[in-house]
Image (tube, rainbow, N blue to C red; front, side, top):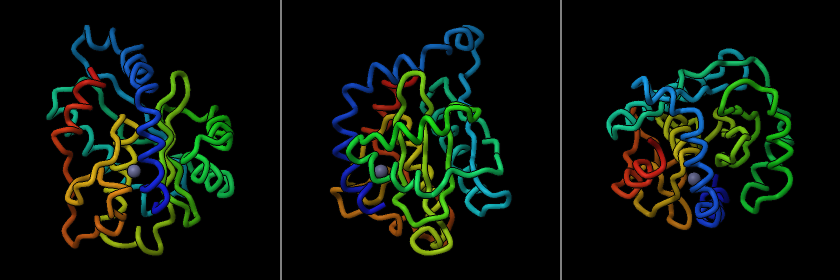
Length: 221
Ligand SMILES: [Zn+2]
C-alpha cells in the first residue's frame, strides 16, 4: 500500500477531472427509475476469494459502513452486502495491476478484462500476495475493482486495519482523493499515512473529512 499511498494520490488527482463526468453519468445512468420510486440505487459487489477468508466479514462491514455514511449524507446510493464467489484472480495479474494502476498501464485493462464476466458492479479481489492494496476508479461501462493484500501478515493482520483499508479503497471507488489528516479514512501519500495507522484494539471506522463529504454530495445523487 506504500506506493499506492504515494503515487495513487497523484494518479487519482490526474484522473479526477476526467472521471467526474463519467462518475456522474455512472451514478445517474440507471438510477432515475429508482429515484422516481424513492429507492436508493444499489451497487452489487462481488467478493472474489476463498470461502471463509477472514477478510470477508470486515469487507462487508466496510460496505455497511459506507451505506450508513450515504444515508447520513442523504445520498440515494447503497452497496449490497457483497456476494462471495469462491474464485480468485491469479496473483500475478493482481500484482501487475496494483503496480500499473499508479501510472495507468495496460495491466489495469487486463485485469478489468479478466473480470468482465464476473457479476456485479464492483469486484473486490482478495489477493494471496503482499501487493499494495489498490482500487480502479469507475469508468463508464466497466467494473470497479478493489484489490486487497494478504491479511495474515502485517499490516493487515493488525486489528481494525482490513475494515478501514477496504473502506478507504471503496472511498476511492466513490471518487475520493487522499488527504493529509492522519485521523481520517482517506489519509494517504504524500502524507505519512500507512495501513498500520488504522490499527486499534477497538473496532472503529476512521471518519470522512468535510471535504470528502462535499465530494460525495457532489458526485452521488
Ligand atoms: Zn488510497
